[in-house]
Length: 183
Image (cartoon, rainbow, N blue to C red; front, side, top):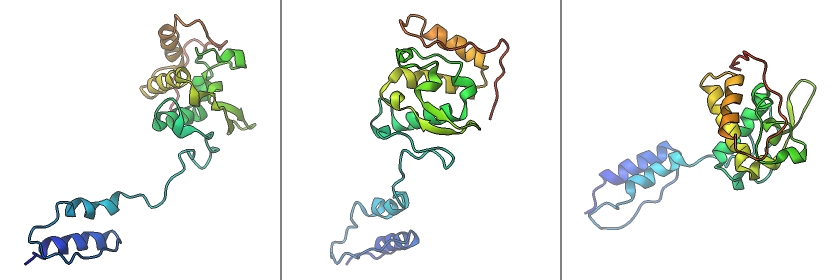
């Protein structure tokens, strides 16, 4: 005879998560090996798939292709949001991929194509989706900024890291003594 203990526990867990479960009519006396994971599965399933292009309500959708970018989607999303929220950093950080030939003045331009008069992002530049250098430079700047480094220190570190690059955007240097601004 089958024990009711595992079935009762599994049904209780499924009902707790609002799932509907069909009972097994097997007379096997051993509980199924997958009964515990099956009960936990509904808690992990998202209610609705989230659009990976959506960063925040105050930002436009990221460009198509974010899930097929050259870096993991989490890194791509984080660097695009950093560019949107911190132009005071990336506007002083050069890029080294050759994008100056496309008119870019700094790493900020690899991510943001336009802002309104108040500084709000109104358009994204898709270039960074396909460029490891753009994303890597922005990610390094973001890590340093989050650790408390000044814009001048970020610029110095990135210039040193990419010193051998044949390319560099014509990016202005931050004022001496530039401070770190947590926003």
